[in-house]
Image 1 (cartoon, rainbow over the protein chains, first blue to last red):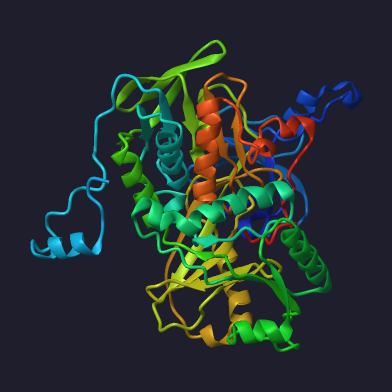
Image 2 (image 1 turned 60 degrees about the vertical axis):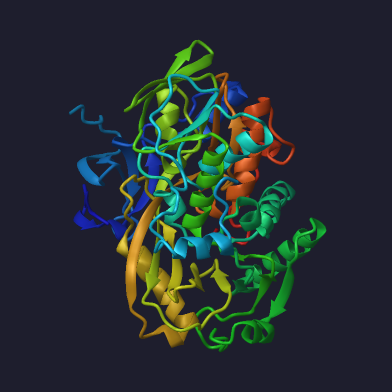
Length: 91
Length: 417
């Protein structure tokens, strides 16, 4: 249980949001040319990091907009929040 | 067994005020080299070591555990055991485990308090009714005992359930597996540890794996906080931390680790003599032998290794519990905790070889691994010893995420796993 600072609405309880999993997984440009292994990688394989993870969230019970969060999954402390399309923070 | 537990040994030890019981397992320092090393000293890992020693004659093996044995999800779950899964592959897997449970206390000479008190799954809408009837038929075709109950029969089997038609999610029926039930979770870990130790398995606690040493396509050993251990077979049974270990070997797994919560109430006199699960409202409850209500809540939807979940998840579960069991309205909850469960996209486990020779994974049990402990250990031991899966775990390989041959138990099983 923690607070998330929605880039559009401000700080709200985590229960207002829905987690969308690992961020920056790019949809293949030529899906027809993908091998089964590449499909498996895209669809199912996840880093599932213990530590700093880049992930997507949606403010379901608010503005309903998607955005990115950098969170330490070992203690749920949020390091940064940035909008879709923005470059992930490097620090 | 050197130190068999019996009525005689109980009486004998009473004369020395129970101060001279032998230790159930030794506390050795790791050797330089083992034939196989199991990473993770929970129920599944200890069972794997036990069956490797017992059925595959591998005695020079070790179990390394970063904390203390049974201190992870083995000691954190709601101890429900059942095998009423929909698909053939799952039915085979979980029923294999259930059959071992039925003789486990005798086999281990350790009372795992396996209690076949039945597990009832409730239906709250017409789709639930159809799904549960379908599952009942599928179970019976697979030789798993299952009956469908209507609302009156549900009420008769568990009188404290509110079957009034005017509650938010009325009880329209349910399924019952009478051979299902519960067991004492700690005892399962301790019983397997004692049995494995007896056959020469080294159980090494407070020993965290820091790295996996690879030689191109095969493993050479593990780096631990107690030094390097050489081995060419590594069986990883690390539950929520499976991906962390996989990353050490340069592998990615189709897993997400999430917090799953449970809670227990203050102890009261016997009030519910079975296990009742309800998937639609996500509430399940049983009563421990100490008298506490044991309640399972759901997972949070985000990845976290923090071993604590959100309050709103617990609140949702308790709302449902109170509507289904108004008699519990003044019960006080004593303890609440979280475990980290590794969830597969198809909600089925992985008991499999990997692309790296000598590296095996038993993971992805998600929210329902406890019930499978003996079967999981038996089949994983078979897979490690023969470098080939047993026919019962062949479907649960890693390659299914490439071939698309998933065992999709999400929502299809009697869930709220």
